[in-house]
Image 1 (tube, rainbow, N blue to C red):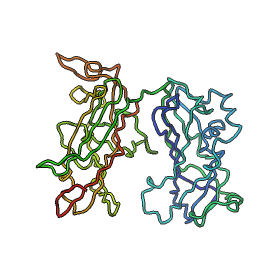
Image 2: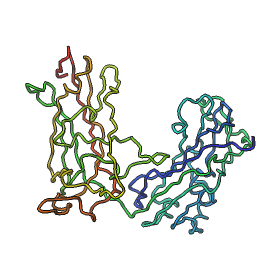
Image 3: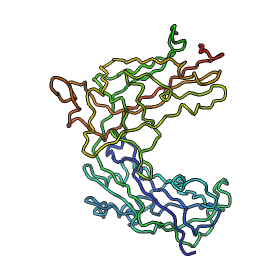
Image 4: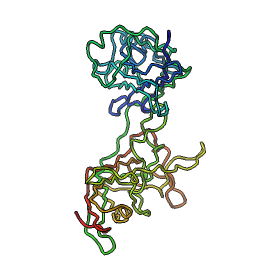
Length: 394
């Protein structure tokens, strides 16, 4: 076999690159062995330095290219400077690709992802000009990999004896005409949300609720803050996976802030304190975002916004007994799940259009999707005990 084909995908983790470096940004390159001719049951270990995965080096040597209106190739001198050495740190030089033999998971779940962070002050970051859009992809099927070998046991630590082996002779190439692309836009800076404090407490029992949770969300800044409670992910920056889908590391929950809906268990992480196992039924449930047309106005309307004045707190309560009613006796640890919201500084009068004596949607000049979300999270935990079907304080 003169060539070893692997499936390659390239993606920018975020659609925005912040020139200040305050917001993280990586170019992700994923590799997966899925060729029908690849029948070796051993794993591969690959040195990525000086290859298409070594992004600055790859751009300088045209293993990667940028295309479209704005291309990095125009800046020949600085690209030439990046050619002097690999940008990969010694501890990150090697990645492992498992064999496809005996694989039971879908190949999309089997990519080994190499993340190249673009740090503020780096040579690569200096090429990204604010106001420009870039698109980076493979220049050809050649990945430029200079050394790789097979591993009999991938759990064995990498040592000098392994790295001193001569490279396998088959050339590793991309198996598909398209490997995706890392597309992004560069901005001078990003706005950041004001500070918000989120707390969780067990409060005094009532006749109808023997164990009641209080959730408080307080605006700690000196400015009014309006929040879109539904947490629609298309309204703010979200990390993307290799296929361009938004990742699910941050659940998009809406119940905590919505005043006319009761809180339910999928806003919480509930763990059995004895077994330390999270109750599976209380993992975030995906919501339906609704059918939309391209010409629909995405701006939040005033009726769907919640405003917090400086120092103001909103309080929400939930009877935890209704959450734990279908579970057996035991001690349970409860914490809030992290939630993301679209936000805008100002109250409704400041940020919304006026419509026949009331407020309409957020003003066009103030609406922006390319912002980091307001993240609501809390380190608070509450323990409750259930004995003979009744909730008691622990």
